[in-house]
Length: 320
Figure: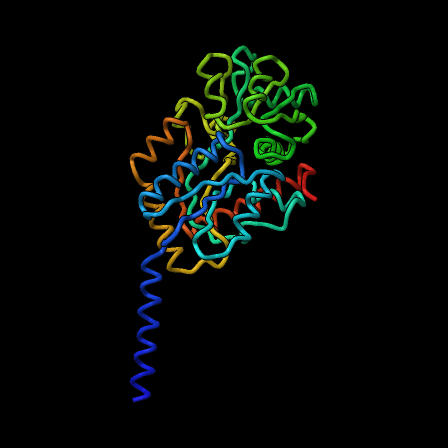
């Protein structure tokens, strides 16, 4: 009799656990964004949050946790309970911040769910620039070290590292094209048009307005495939024979140790959204590049990116 009672208790516990798993989520989910409202990361996160809310049947509330160059928001994601009720948008900076000594966080601090967006760096000059190719720019810079200047973001930001890595790969000293820090791509592009700098290495979507206005011209994209926005712009491989790829990317992640069943459900939900025509149309309308790498593939992507960023930052003297 006691055996039967124990079996019934065990069966009831198993049934309760099964119901709990099937019921996830049974309350609102918080979606943390490490950057401010209105930017590309925020826009991407809000799109996925809205679509996940429809798919999961629970509110998915976007919370912007800014500060510390991305450290505050990335920490909020990593330090939350690993129960599926706090997820967030992690960005390329997670492969950079620990090299700068800003945090101990790294890509290994998370349960990776999916890479959903990637915007490669461009190589843009003024429309009236005398240089018609990347090679001409680099040749002129080497002939007059320090005279030509570049911008696109703050010191040590992703677009600075795009140029630093390119120069490092080509064995060109970093001082050949000094970096002028800016508060982002938009002010850097304005400085380019005004003649304050000679090159901007932000993404082509960020440079789009001034390119389409005829005030700037892209000479290359730092990717292994052409730009959907500007299909006539060559890759770096086509421009100078160097397969150099660097991008600002965004992916969705959860705290480390997320249960396997919750991980599987979230990845499946995100994949359904990422493969939809609606997402692709939304991304195209904003000029965002789409990308897809789920779970372990996203982890491998970040690990490779982390190693490359570390090498670049060390070469540029930006690592602690």
